[in-house]
View: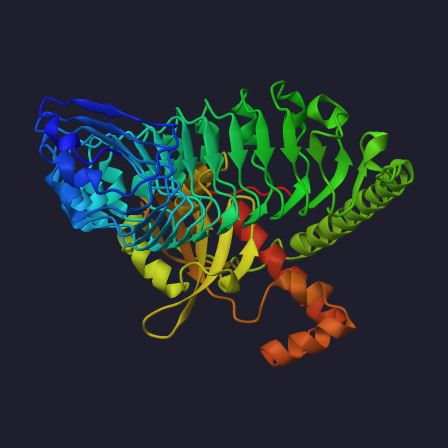
Length: 538
C-alpha cells in the first residue's frame, strides 16, 4: 500500500478488494487527510495487523469501510463511533478479539454490520439497539455470551439477523421475535438459549429461514410458526422440544427443509408432511415418533428423509428397513367384543337399579315428604366470590386438588381462609352448553333444600388473569370421597380407602340398601315437591 495516499486530497473511493496486497494498516492514518473519502474496500487481501485508533479520524463523510477476510487482529477501536455517516462496516472473517465498543451505538446511519467469524467476546452491547436504520446484523461465529439484548427490538428495519455459533444464554426476547421486517434469515443456532419459543415468532410473516438448532429450548413446538407463511427452511434440531408436531404447520405450503431431529417429540408422524409438495429435506431422527411411516411425497425418497432412532415406527418404503405394521384385525375384534359385553352389563345394571328405585319409591309414596322452602331468591342469598379467592383456595387450580371431572367442568378441593373445605366446580366454557348448565344449576340448586342433596354455597362469574370468562360453583365438600369409590372398591382399594378416610371402604348389603333409599327420597323430592319440579333420566 502506498504510504502517501493522503496526498490525494480529492480521493472519494478506494476499491482494492480481492487482490494480494501485503501490508499493515498504517495507510489508514494517511487517509485521514482525504476529507472527501466515503468508501474503503480492501476485502480479501493479506493486510495484517491492528486497526489504528486513527480510523476514528477518517472523513466524516465516510460511508463504507469493508475489510473482511484479512488477518486483522486486536480490538475494534473506540473511535469507530466518531464516523457518524458510516452505513456499512465489514470486518468479518478476521482475528479481532476483545469487546465490541459501546460507542458503536452512535452510528445511527448504520445499515449493515458484519463482524462474523472473529474472536470477539463479552456481551453484545445494548447500545446496538440505537442502530434503528440497521438492515443486516451478523455477529455469528464469535464468543459472545450473556443474553440477547432486548434493545434489538428497536431495530425495526432489520431484514437479516445472525447470532449463531456463540455462547449466548437466557430466553429468546419476544421483542426481537416481533421484528416483522426480518425476511432473509433469523439464525440463533449453536448457542445456549433456553426456555420455550415465544408466541411472537408468528410475527415473522415474511421470514424465509428460521434456524434455532443446537440450543436448550424446551416446551412444545409453537403452532404460531404456522403464521410464517413465507418460510422455506425451518431448523429446530438438537433441542428439548416435546409433544407432537403441531398440525398448524401444514399451512406452510412453501416449506422446503424441515429438521426437528434430536428432540423429545412423540406421537405419530403427521400426514400433512407427505402433502407438502416443495418439501425436499425432512429429518425426524432421534425422537420418540411411533406408528406407520407414510408412503407419499418426501417419504418416497430415502436420501431426503431420515427417521432413524425413533420408537416403534413401522411401514414406510423398503429402504428404511422398518418392520411391517401389525394388523389391527384381531385387536379390533376383541375390542368390539369387550365393548358389547360392557354395554350389555351396563344396561342390565341400569334396569335393575331402576327397578329397585321404583319399588322403594312406590313404598314410600305416602310417607312424609321432606322439603325445604326458600324465603329469598337465590341471587339474594349468596355474595359472589372472586376469581382470585378461588385461585388461592385451590392452590392455583392445581392438579393435586382435582377431585372429579364431568361433562361440563372439573371439580377441585378448595380451602377457605377460615380453614374449611369446599368443592369448586370450574365450568369448561369451551364446551357447548356449559354456560347454559351454569345458569341452570344456579337457578335450581340454589332454590332446593334436601338432606340428601349437596348444597350450593356460592358462585363466581368473573374473568381470569388472562381476561377470559370464568364461571364456577361452590358446593359443600364431601370429606368421605365419592359414592362411586365406596361402591366399587376392590380389596386393595379397601385398605387404601381406610388409610385415607379412616373408614373401611367396603359397604354391606344393608348399607347399600339405605343408600338406595336415600337416593330415591331425593329423586322423589326433585320430581314432586321442589319448586320448580325437576325430572331426571335414570
